[in-house]
Length: 189
Image 1 (cartoon, rainbow, N blue to C red):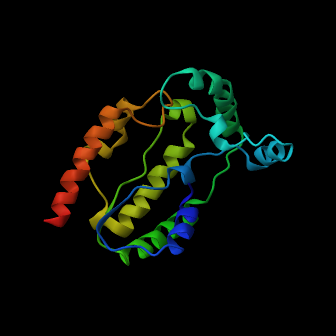
Image 2 (cartoon, helix red, strand yellow; image 1 turned 45 degrees about the vertical axis):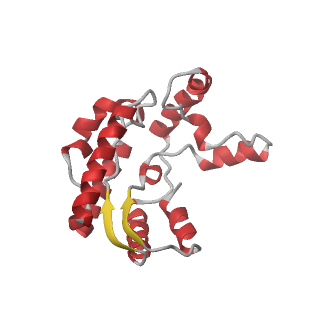
C-alpha cells in the first residue's frame, strides 16, 4: 500500500495511545510499478485480475509461482523500459513526515526502520537507488529514532532473499524480530 493511502487511512481513525510504534513503510512507493494505463485498459475490458500483483511471483516456490512466472518476466521487461512509481522521492519524504506527525500524537516512542533494497540483477537498479536516497533523507531528519544495525545493511540481508528476490526467508525475519525486541527494550527501559 502506498504511504499516501496509509496516511489517509490513519487520518480517518481514532488512534489509541501506544508506548512505542515501529515504522517500516515505503517499499511499494519506491519500487517500479507496471504501467497503470495498461492495467486500467485490461480492467476496463473486464479482466479485473490485471493488477500489479499479477505481475509478481510469490516468495515461496510452488504452483502459483510457476503460473505467475511468465507475467513476472513481462514485469521485468517493462520496468526496464518504462519506470512508473506511486510517488516521487520528494512526495514520499513529505508523506513520511506527515506519517511521523500523525503517529507522534499517539505514541511516546518511535522506531523507524530503513527501506530495504532488492536484488538489482533481477529488478534493476532504480529501486535500490531510490531506497538509498530516501534512507539518507530519513536518517538526516530522524537520526535518533532510525534503527541502525549491520542486520539492516544490504550486504547482510541480500543473503536471505526468498524465491521472489524481494522478500526474505524466515531465518532473516527471526533475526530481525530479535533486533526489534532489543531495540524496544532499550527504548522503553
